[in-house]
Amino acid sequence: MNPPHAIPATESFKTVRVASREEAEEVSAFLLQPGLFGTPLTPGEQEEFKTHPATAVGCADDAYWLVRDGQGAVCAVIGVRMNVEKTGIFEVSALAIHSSRRRRGLGRRLLELALRFVAEAHGRGLLFETSSDPSYAPMHSLLHALGFRQVGRFPDFYYPGEDTLWYYRAIER
Ligand SMILES: CC(C)(COP(=O)(O)OP(=O)(O)OC[C@H]1O[C@@H](n2cnc3c(N)ncnc32)[C@H](O)[C@@H]1OP(=O)(O)O)[C@@H](O)C(=O)NCCC(=O)NCCS
Picture 1 (spheres, rainbow, N blue to C red):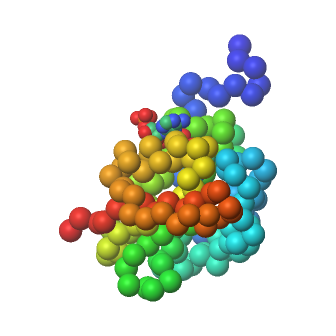
Picture 2 (tube, rainbow, N blue to C red):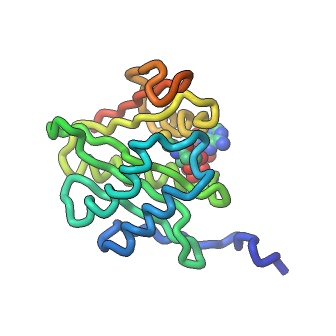
């Protein structure tokens, strides 16, 4: 018999678009949990993860999705928003999978879902801002695997020694 924390081989995951204040709060709590990301959140990220999921509820251009595991706990989140220029380029505002649920295809599935959302919204492309820190190597691999290409780098953007990397994928028509 499996120990209580073991993940059943056939565990089912359920993905839902965040549609209520309660779900938005679950997303915020998930994103703000310690140790989810490989580097400390910046003050701006902390503020955004606290407020943006709730702001996005009912919004046409901004959206979050959460994934529940077989026990109903949130185990993955992605957020998307139209960028500040409002001319059809969208950005991923957050993507994270709980460490116990990585390498099961959830990251790929959520990023593909975000690309479909942008295409259905008649967006021109999806921008993904990520860190140069080596702990983000899995994210860089996933972006390459889904056809994103690196279009920019801003040295020391997050913190001294931690650059931001911009990856972009145009939406084919
Ligand atoms: C990056 C992250 C989202 C990937 O999610 P995931 O569900 O584990 O990834 P998937 O199982 O869907 O893997 C899809 C592809 O990503 C790449 N990848 C994922 N994890 C990897 C790893 N540890 N090493 C190398 N490549 C990896 C591979 O190309 C993989 O394809 P493959 O399985 O055919 O080799 C996840 O590791 C995570 O949440 N990390 C912490 C938070 C984070 O860094 N978020 C990004 C913020 S900018």
